[in-house]
Amino acid sequence: MGGIHPLIRRPLSEEATQLLDYLLRRRREGDLQPPLVRDAAGELDTLVPVVRTAAEELHERRLAVLLQPGIVAPVAWPRLTAVSGRGVHLHLTDQLTEVGAAPPEALAEAWTDGEGEGDWPAPEPTGDSPADEVWLALRAAHHGDLAGALEACRRATAATLRAGVIPLLARLAGWLDRLLTAARAPESPALRYEPPGTENATAGQYFQEGWEAEIIRSRERAQAAYIEALRTDPGFDGARLRYAQVTFDLGEPNRALAELARLTQARPRLGAAHLLRAAMLLDLAEEGAPPEGWDEQAAAHIRAALADERADASLAHALEARRLSVRGEAEAAAKAARGAIARQPGQAGHYHLLGLALAPTADLVAAAWAEAAAVLADHDFIPAAETLFSLRQSPQVAGAVPHARQLIDETWQ
Image (tube, rainbow, N blue to C red; front, side):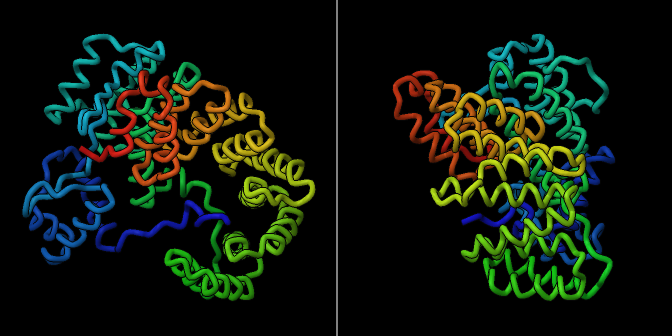
């Protein structure tokens, strides 16, 4: 049934988190040079082998790269203005031009020069064109202002999305999204909508045990831990939501739905509960086993979530796209998916929903570009790669997106 919630991801070790914070702090302070491992060890007051291990962990997550023995790159800045590896030739300038937002020649040259030399100017306010927003995003990211860079990506995406998706802009937004989440930054889209915690230390400890059990897919243990957390603090909404999710994942959907129905009745303005119950109803509908009245219930929950300014509006639009797809309303589903992308352009799943919605309308090329954006936004998002693989069997897609196969295999440069 439902997979592990996006918030539950394998966390970085404490040492890797400290190293990432250090690397980003250097960037924000204007030091753009790759640090030596021994310098990082001195700054963090730890041992060189500990820093090496932490750097390897960041490297595996594609959050930092090991340039050579003894040197750590500030962050794994991917090629953002072009992808040219493995036979892929995508250029941000071309993609913006295709959606009617061609950058001035001087600006396009500045992108290329900055990426080739690592010499981005400090971020400053720009004009209001999508190309200006992209320029601001690139500069802000290079200097460690991840939140500002992601917001600039959002504005650029929202302005160009009606004409088409820009896969390289999705790549930048997805990379920023992951960095913010790994750094546990409050601006992270994945963390911004976490429900309030608990002031009860014992309940908090039980919740932590459940969270760690979920990471290793020990759902029975997680369920037991969340039950204890709720016994200690019955008003701990975060624990109740996680309890409902693991109960659903353990094959007890009726019990999970009933739990969330009680919670939404008691807390009608808790958007997170509405979104979770809507997602469960949609999971069941997509599996062909929906409960009676699932459509009306899901629609009502989505509306309730959108009325809560603290809820994730992007997720609400994504759920609406899924609901409309199940109903066979492809064009309306595509519109809802675009709404989700405009709000959170770094989420691979949103682009995938757009691709799935466009395919039934026979707009296979646009669907392929949406799936390409999903692949670039998150290299681990397998459903998009599988869909892109299927789409490239069409002669129409093969001619318009000749590098689809390479995009599936694309890795950081």
